[in-house]
Length: 301
Image 1 (cartoon, one colour):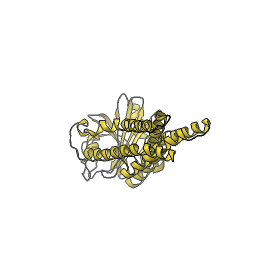
Image 2 (cartoon, one colour; image 1 turned 45 degrees about the horizontal axis):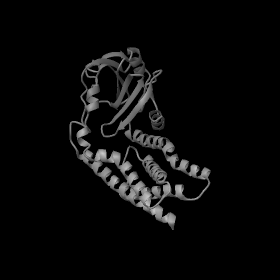
Image 3 (cartoon, rainbow, N blue to C red; image 1 turned 60 degrees about the vertical axis):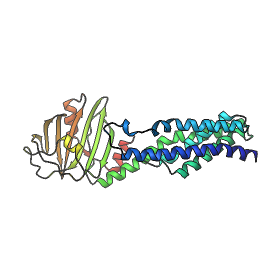
Image 4 (tube, rainbow, N blue to C red; image 1 turned 30 degrees about the horizontal axis):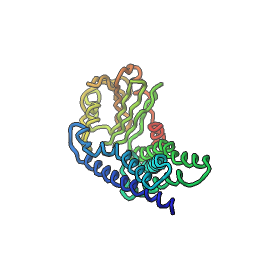
């Protein structure tokens, strides 16, 4: 009964704090989604700093309660309880892309179980080696989270690439690796970024526009593709210069741009930073189709 009393004493402030913070997190997400501002900071609101310090305040409240009810090591019990709660929250988040607040009831249950577990590990009589082992188990989710989140991201990306319905074309340029790959179904666009040091090659794959007739009308510019709104029809101008079969170049504000036609799609390749002209040309000449699974693995290594 003594253990149950102390576990409940830790679970009460822990679950209340977790519930309040989760409700505030949900409110903050809605506020940012509805906010229209020219600066990102203006949409954060008062809730953001509270979310940062809230877990520390909640842990401190648990520590005060544990000290009041006579737990021998309230600091360790509160710390392990916070660790268990944070680990459980990370496991829940690992199954979702990005960061999405869980339901309030789930946060309350996770915190209650986590802080109760912290009290149990510290107060139950057991050999020291078992106590240390249990403490390490509470830390395990922090080590597993990156692997689980990467697997989730791969699954989400693979599904998005499959639904896109465009050929998944990536260059084969020595020393360059894929840093990011995104499928935008609404804009019918595959965007791939490849990096080598501070040099970036950008690849945009989209539907061939109506009126595509090089060298006079060579498809949209890089800026037009990036700023395209869902459902917007892209213009087929300006002109370009042919350098090979279904391969053209032109100069845009971003610098030299290569355009490659593949069936009913057009690929625009541009660069950021000190990218040698030969590397950009190699990228345009080595476009290779990959499967959705292969691209998801390359983009989430």
